[in-house]
Image (cartoon, rainbow, N blue to C red; front, side, top):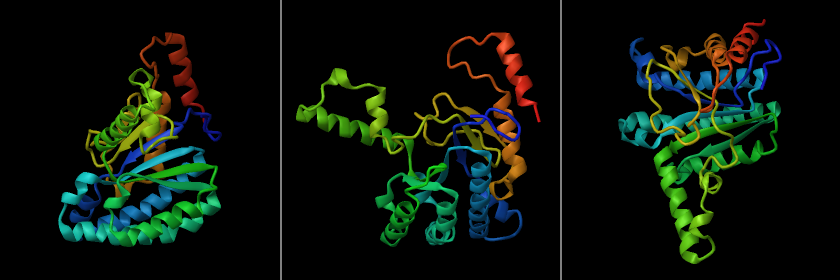
Length: 255
């Protein structure tokens, strides 16, 4: 993918670990829920920015399955925020041609959220310009375990031979089936770990960490991350001639 505005290479699939909402609020003497509300506003802006730049796949780590261990009031506030976010964004996503999908244990979410999630996904199902995936109650390890259970059932039933199991088959059983590998993972708030986010899909991803809290993440921060991605040389285990690396760095500075 090439950014038509700057001729820089773009990631086909961008993943963002949105971190720092609570700390952003606490530093301002606000309740942590205020940080989550501000963070939801930033999601709207960042999705629009990614759509404008022509990134076809974006996955946002919205709620880890480990986040259920947070204080009850904070979790309840997040569950209240989700339907409001969907209601506020679904028509814009539809108009922008953005397809919404969800990865994670949706059944873990309160029943009152099942309808809004299904409605939003159905309303945007025809979107072809970009696929936006929200990782909700998601954990990469849990996803792989469930995928292996599904495969084991097929083997036990005699419909699949062990020697037929390969990476493609496994990927098809994951909740991210149909999505390409991640090219770039951005994590905000100065943390430097994946935290069980699409670990198989991120096997060859470039990692970018910023000290900016998610509520402060804006177009400038996004372009800074995309610029860093464009300057990197992705070898995928091979050897890239120095002339090619130099040419890529030169191209990334155009515009």
